[in-house]
Length: 150
Image 1 (tube, helix red, strand yellow):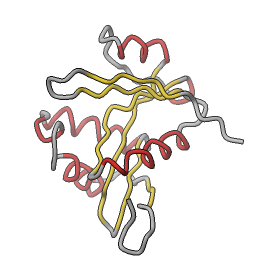
Image 2: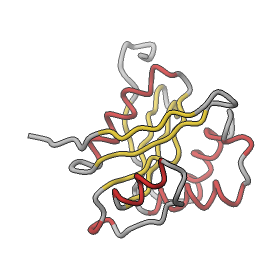
Image 3: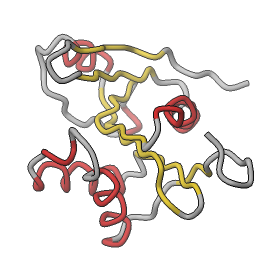
Image 4: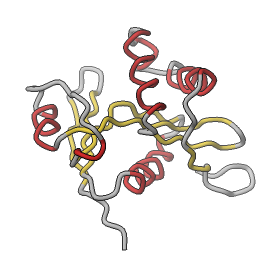
C-alpha cells in the first residue's frame, strides 16, 4: 500500500520513551486482539521491545500503520512454543539463535509483507517464529528461515 505520493510506508525503530510507548499502545489498542489484552502485560511487552530495539514500525503520512515486536529466544524454545508446550523466555541477544514475533499489527494487511521483510532484515541470521490465532477458526504457526544478506 502506498501513501498519497506513491511511496511505501517508511520503516523506523522508535527510541525508548514514554511518548514512543504511548504511540505504539495507541496504535495496537485500536483493534483486536490487542484491544482486549490486559494492560499490564501489553505495556510490559512493548516497553521491553522498545528498550531492546526489538521492534519495527511502518509510518505513512506521519501515522503508524504497522508494528511488529519480537523476543530473542532459542530455536528449541521457539519450536516448543509453537506447539503450545512452552512459554517464551528472553535470551540475551548475543546468545540467541531465533526470535519469536510476539506482537504484529497492521492497519491494512497489505503492509504485512513489508513489515515481515523489515523484521528479517533487522534480525539476519536468525529464524523467525510466529503463531497467529484466528478467533475460533484455528491457528497458523510458522517458522521463517533466516535471512542471510550478501
